Length: 387
Ligand code: GLU
Image 1 (tube, rainbow, N blue to C red):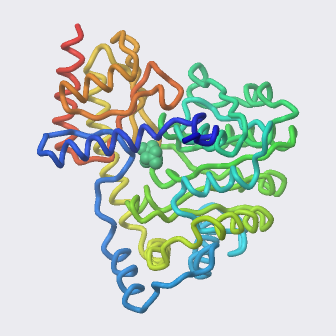
Image 2 (image 1 turned 45 degrees about the vertical axis):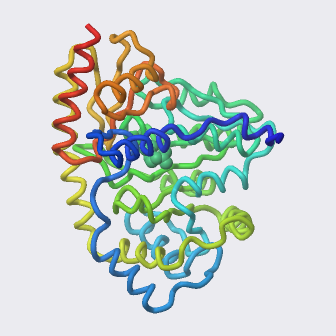
């Protein structure tokens, strides 16, 4: 069988593969500590589950509009107004099968052969692959020497007549960095001046620490607002990873185009799941804060343990729930490091090569404290064994 060339150009999702492998090992009875996929260990809050159950009981089990339940689209528009100072209406929102799907649909709607998409590295591993699946060309800009943030100068230099889109992700997966408001302003100035578009992946906006502050690039005025698409979802802030509810916000033109794509591919997101999402937005946000507080504690413990291992270095993340750990002193590639760590200590981590940084590994601390403590004991043992 001859597969389409586009499949040969992309790699499978390592985050999902390693997470599945760790889960399979656990199911076999092996004691595994998984720092792999960014998936909060908390159960989805009760009131959100109750709203979805109620929707099921009320017969919200049929096809809905491809773009999403009107009530959810309005609730998302309201959230963007209240939290992010953005003037979107329901018609500026499409509900997608998770945040990932909103990005994928956007690429399909926007990118053509020859179009370049600028992606600062380290990047979330699916961005370049989505660009390739949409027949575009990812242009990777290394930010290892600029604090893992693309500077306005770097962006300006990377733009060519073929550049269509910049992918911005703050708080960032995998590095945990958060752009300051003035850094976002400087990026916006280049985007407007050089006449390109930007997609802002804001899925981690609620998981932010200390003095870091989230602002949406779209909120910095009409000129940049008109060039911005916002991708987000419910998975991270509300621990709803398996529900697959995300969204894209943007001009009515792009939302209509994405709705057409969705109408011929997935149709609407699971109807009753969307009612859970409405409840997530319209109920108390205490659950989000409780989870954030737990992440603060876990971040403290994991960072402390990491910094006790002389071969490893890691900056304190300002957001999301990942440690992006420099392993270059171990002499191993990131893939070798993760393979050996899983085989010898049953600790799952994601190799940095997947994020465009082979001298790093990513550890998720969206897991319980006991697993963090025990997993870090084993990581320590593993690195010691390399001496
Ligand atoms: N976004 C999460 C991660 O990076 C979930 C897995 C995925 O979709 O890649 O771990």
